[in-house]
Length: 138
Length: 138
Length: 138
Image: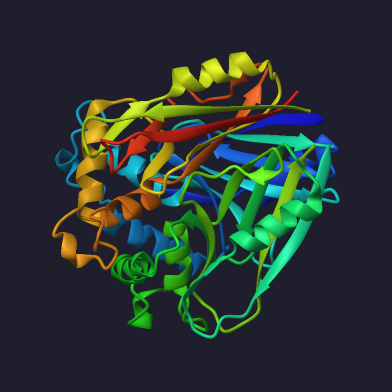
């Protein structure tokens, strides 16, 4: 069994942002030399997400609006977590979007349907944060 | 390390539907001959879900009503994704229900608790769509 | 390839509770002797969750309040699942929080970011329930 590990780093310009990291994960897979296995991609921070969906800007605007409805950022004092912090909403938004994805590796490629793309979802940005890519297989 | 891959195909009669795919996944596991490992089951489409819950029709009706409350289908023009498409709500519903499950394989069986069943959740149906089953182990 | 399996048992005093199970999972990892691989931790019951977030009591209070807003426990008769049961809300809450996490194993440790902790989320407690830890690797 082979295993491969890499961290991807992000430092977004805004509090919330979606970044397509599919090319980065594909590069990891090439470096790993693994042809059959599983690839875990997870946020290493608890106010960020890794998820799979469509790379379509209208949909991303819908996600932003929808998440603000489900777990609004403000007023900050509606959350008990927000004493020294102001990011309780980011913990909740990341919970809806998910921490991680597991992707099948088949014949050396990410085994995806036609529109699947991997995104980093930042909900408390403007600081350096990481995603972990771990691949195991042969 | 062994690996196994299969696609399951669906073409639902209605826009939204829940289908118990546990027997299909068990058949994949038998075909694979894998006794110890991990089984990934994921929707290959971004408006569908694979999730684990109870096979109980009342609960499924509750899911339908609840998801419509969290991410209503109509009016279509509330979503920016809905230009040529009308399925923005399906992207959001699938996000709540999840893209994938990972199931432990122990002694050649799906290592489940008493009520766990795997479902395909369709949120934009009436077209041919796929689920991927990938098993790795020994 | 090595594989390891263990069940963790819980019997909470209240209907809903969050329990930090990171030390239990670390103990499993030590017992497994696995240095590189993947660790699956999943609820074996469909009204409970395993998730990763911060070990901060204010945040946990926010989760409780937020989940009650998204999927209220009462009135019980708002859910069709609640005939002989009264736990439909627990199925929905667990769906939001997720059934499982997959954690990378690197150099014999849980490959975590600075604040990641694994929690058992109970939504229909006061009975004996289980979590499965399955680790594969080398």
